[in-house]
Image: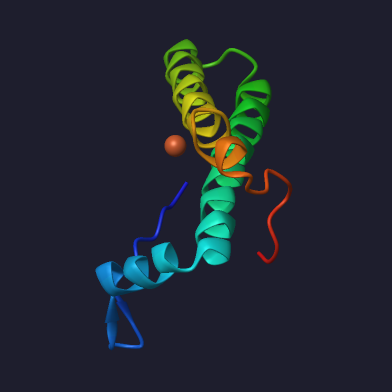
Length: 98
Ligand SMILES: [Fe+2]
């Protein structure tokens, strides 16, 4: 899975500039956190499907993917439960857009 980190937006805004704008707008901030939460949750599903396709072969890759699912699950839980979206009263539904 590829994760793209924004460096420049139209060669004018850095990732730090974008973050300042996102954090200063509560609604956009919550939508962004929910998007992260959704992606962490969704990766568990995708990785589980891959493990099922591998059907135990090779065992080492299956083991590594299982560890990866565990990590992604903890990230989704952190964003959902631990004083973030639920505590902030933010959405935990399917986020808008792609
Ligand atoms: Fe993650």
